[in-house]
Length: 239
Image 1: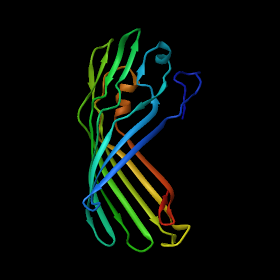
Image 2: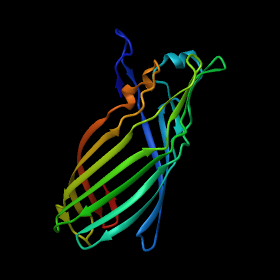
Image 3: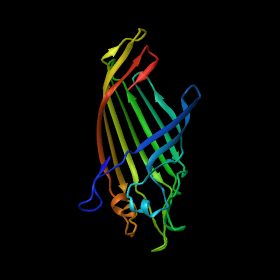
Image 4: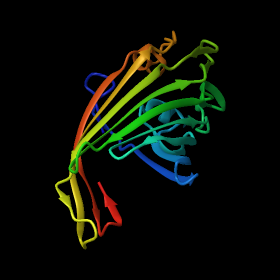
């Protein structure tokens, strides 16, 4: 990402944020219920700053583990042309706290001890042999406030907003060659992803941008994406 300068006349800053997720799932009861586990790894903003040079650099980067996530989902209803499912995902606060430690004295610390709970419902529809659609609605809740401890101003707390996610995908099979070799299916797909905050976060009265209500207030995003899904030899899926 190319980030504008922090001060007038400064130079642009570049950084490459990367995320890797290791995911495993186990099904039960004829594959109608499943448990999953996600282990995230990030190369992102360094959560431990221990030098003046890093404190003056607004975008220090480091590798780190994120919050472990585990979930339960179940197939609620299924017939010939539609299926509905529901579940919940829980994210544990396993990521490190954000700490600024200069001259062996903690200047700032944000305790990242919040759990996240995301219940969701989803459905898939196949109204004909070619067309298909799927949709999901989820709502992310948090367990409470985060605490910021500052040597300059003492402790204060702030709370992140809750998030509502709405996702819709529509596609049409243009290749269907089940049981044959090579490309056995192919479908163009259009996706819409909407994110909003039904409740605003608590505004922390701090002076620093990363704890201001500007970043934890009202959010509305709409993303539109397009691509292809398909299979090769009926075994390998791609998208």
